[in-house]
Amino acid sequence: MGEKLQFTELDQYLFGQGTHYDIYKKLGAHPTMRGRKKGVYFAVWAPNARSVSVVGEFNEWDIQKNPMQKTGPIGVYETFIPEAKIGDLYKFYIIGYHGEEIYKADPYGNEAELRPGTASRIADISSYKWKDTTWMKHRPEFNEKKSPMAIYEVHPGSWKKHEAKDEDDPGFYNYRELAHELAAYVKKMGYTHVELMGIAEYPFDGSWGYQVTGYYAPTARYGTPKDFMYLVNELHKDGIQTAVNSNKRSDYTEALVNKFFAQTPMVAVYGERESKGIPKKPDPAAALEIADKMKLSPAEILYIGDSETDMKTGQNAGMDTIGVAWGFRGAEELKANHATYIAENPEDILKYIL
Image (cartoon, rainbow, N blue to C red; front, side, top):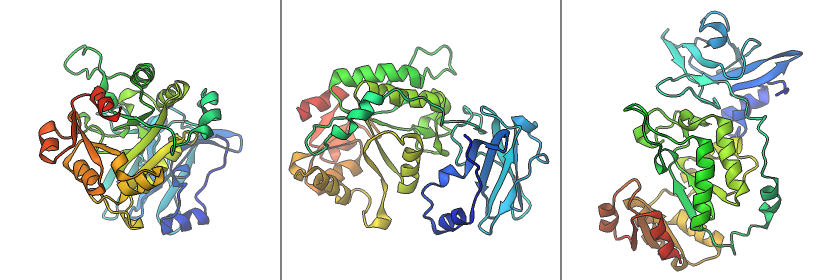
C-alpha cells in the first residue's frame, strides 16, 4: 500500500507484446493512496467495451457512480475510488461493443466471494507477517541434486472433512485447520514436499478446481488469502517445502506463484510449454528434462500419476510408474495402461520408494 498506481505507456507496450510478467501488479484491485486519500486502484482489460464502471458495496452497486477511464489504445480501463475499502465486494459493469450489459468478476482479483456468489472481494495481501524466518534462512542449503524428495499431492477439499452439519454443509477444513493437520501428517509419513491441487478459485465443487475462474485468488471455500498464507507459513515452520504443478498456461501458473509465494522456494513450477518446444504429455520431453535436472537416469526415477496419460508419459521416458488409485482415474484404467505399481493409498507409495 502506498505506491501510486497507473497503467503507463510501458505497461501498454509490454502487455500488448504479451511480455508483461508483472501485469498482476497493475490489473485488478489494489489498496493504495492518492495524495493523502486512502482508496483502491482498479484496472481491467476490456478491449471491445464501449464503457466500463466499477460497482460494489462501496457505491451500492450504482453503475453510474464510478466510471472508469480508458488509458491508451489497447483497451485497459482504470480508476481510483476513495470510498472502496478492503473486504468490499465488487464487479466490473461493462457495456459491450453491441450494447450488451455485462457484470464481470475481476480476472485479476486476489479474493473471491464464496460460491454461489460470483463477485470479487478487495484484498490486501501485502500486510501478512511471515514467521518462517528460520526456514527461509536455511532454504539455500537445500540441494535437489543430492537430497531425497517425496512429494505428497493433496486436494484440500477431500483430504479430510468435518462431519456435515446438514445436507448443504461440505464439511471442509479451512486453511488454518489444514495447516496443522497437514503439516503433522506429511512430517509423520516422511514426505518432504506438498503439492496442493485445486487452489485457484472455481465455481463447482465437483470439478476439484479444474474450472478456474480466478487465477490470482485462492478459493474462498477454505478461507481468505491470508488464511492460505498461514497454511504455507505453517508448512515452512515444520520444514516442509512446497511445489506447484499445473496443466494451465505457464504464464498464468508462474504469475500466480510469484503473486502469492514470492518468498517461497519452488522445486519446480511447470505449466504448458509447447511454445518453447516442450510438448505436452504423454511426450516424454518434460519428464526427461526433469531427469536431466536431477542428474539421474530415467531408470532411477519413479513417475507417479493418476491417469492413462501419466502412465504413458513415464513409460515413454523409460521410467517405472506408480498409478495412484484415488486420483482422477481409477485403478482399472491404470492397470490397463500398464502401471508398474498401483498405490491404493499414500502409504503404498512409500513401499515402492523405499
